[in-house]
Length: 322
Image 1 (cartoon, helix red, strand yellow):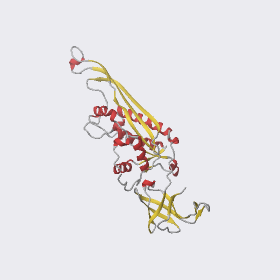
Image 2: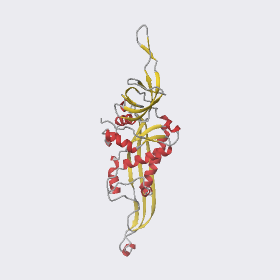
Image 3: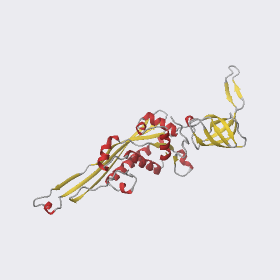
Image 4: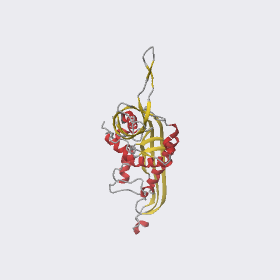
């Protein structure tokens, strides 16, 4: 894998308040939409990444509900690109778990769109003869439109790749009315540009209403699972590799679980207590010199700012502290 330069620069989107730190950190990967791609192309007139659109809407829902902390999308995409994870890789549970380790989250949310489209019915009187059609109206009829969207999501444990929960969100919207000639109502992106599924134009369309209803349903079910997620605590243990003023470079990085924003203790190794019978080290009495706040991290090293009364030296210990 490539190094994730500047890994987790500002990865976390959180609500205000220190209590937010107790919430589980998750990442929402783009949903797969291969099953409904033909329906998407038929509706919009061109292929649209509705999987990414729905995952973005779900992120917004989860942040608003404040049951989770959610990794910032732009920073996450940058890191996944650096790590060469393709969209197809992300669907696999084991790969999703690896991604979760890199991002330092409690769980990964991935999923797929299983239904996406409209089911329109029209009952009408044809034109021609002595009917209304001879006046050029093209037919009088009743047009009933229905849009249905279904999305399945998985919560994946980053340590075991176990599927902690599988939930399905469903959304439906119906409209009806009379029409003279012409086709049914509804909104379509057309033109080949990328459709903004978060826009008010899309939200007010019959399909947009169904999408938002499905996302709301999905988000609520995921909210209900928040308290059951495992707490991920990474124990970091490394050494000071370089000292320049109050800037330290460590010999451990993201591969060992270090991430930007971490606060680690810096210790000077002291007296070793050994078992007199076996010579085995029973305990080491270390002196805490201060703390380091990580500002940069790659796979094999990390840089941070030291704060403490006694300056550390190369070879001093750096460890996770409560």
